[in-house]
Image (cartoon, rainbow, N blue to C red; front, side, top):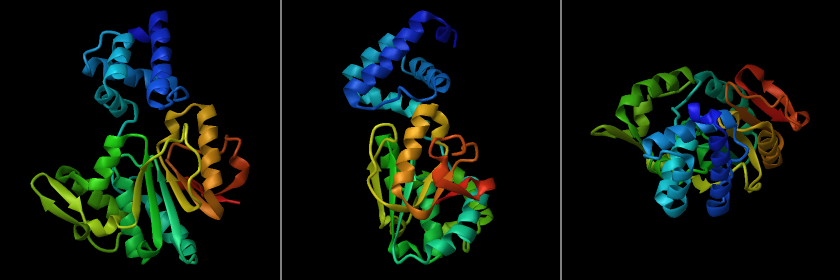
Length: 275
């Protein structure tokens, strides 16, 4: 971390973000700088780069190296039914309202490797909503999206996921929804028949659909205030009136310039309703 204290590191760091934006149209310039610098240093250490300039040269001339870097920047870490009470609140308080609509559109913004998407799909199936719901699962990391679309997860994680599922109000056994093989489980293709996986950036892209529930959890904590406001603007524009936004346990819309468009619905679980 000593490199973050040098003027040279700061200059090279800014140039790296500018170069990535120009070459690949990925804009990380308004991500929280402290955590982003830590992750760039981790990438340098793992990718054998002695300076940020060396890392920049590598990613500019080799797209695979760029996507290696994306793995560090986007932190593709998640779990099924993460924060189970959030999903329990969705099931008990939000789903009954969503059931009044003839058809639904859900958006999982920053879906990572898909754990939350499959969690929502299972909940929708158990509440007889999956057949009339379109789910948009978006992320900026193409490798994460590919893994999400495959629906394959490590066997060693399933016990934790199963416990989360039951705490989240699951009506069956999580094992009913996947097939196990050596070292991994694959969730049934029927769960993703109405899921569209797509590349989308809250930093650079625009609204693409009108939705009834947006789950954007543990994404905004990596943005600075300016980018958070941009993202909240997109989310607000994408939601139908009286519909719902779910955030991560450490996130809030309270201090955003878009806070006036939302009312707390279940404040403890960071679920908001567009007013």
